[in-house]
Image 1 (cartoon, helix red, strand yellow):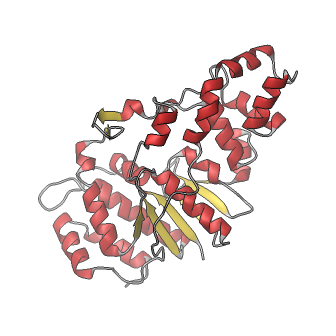
Image 2 (image 1 turned 180 degrees about the vertical axis):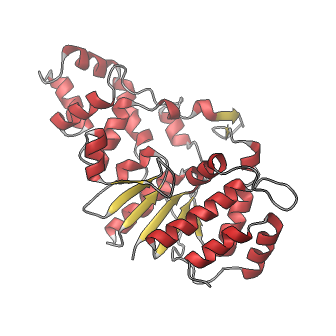
Length: 310
């Protein structure tokens, strides 16, 4: 019973920027993100044939618990400050207008769309992956353009990432062998520790100045975990240079809180839902109306064929 978890925002952003905006509804509104996402779903279903598929959703793109730990987290992406929130994300207007259409089409098709208040889609994916592993309900394929989710890779549990570096039709299959070859780390957890040390400017994570990806990987190869590296620092281990110990010490405040931000949640309160790939549209009339209103006929037909409805 294979499970496929879609990082929805990652995929519809990629579709928006990768599919020409000449794809428009009958009244001229861009639908390139909608069409691109549907075509991606159809291709994934046809190529991989998952029994279960979940469109994981960002109910909160910048969760308060991560901002409390590191205020710079995604701060550069805030388009508008809103009292009581961590801000509204900057999203192109033409894409923002397509998101409700995506929501409606997924509902009409019957594809499970799952988010959790206060959490990102990454956390939904982390939680559903943890549940699948615990229940021996894999294998699990995670489809995302976000390298943060490489931390979930686990060969023994059958968890891998399909990373569309060259496009969704030719993804990198990221397993432990790929992590070792590309990043010099032995596991998903080691990737998370490396990412903590390295930092990520795209997410506003400073990392440890002077310790890049290769140095972090070498440290992890020597000491096993981030905790092991910090213990070696505190013990004055000669395997670390004086400069490395100093840099790690100067970054101590960051290193104490960064794992809360970098690590995806495994225990988000995901509500009960049916992840099964639908055997028929959940709402045929709504699907027909949406197809006509937004000019989605060819893309919806590809999904129908991929799911075996025709």
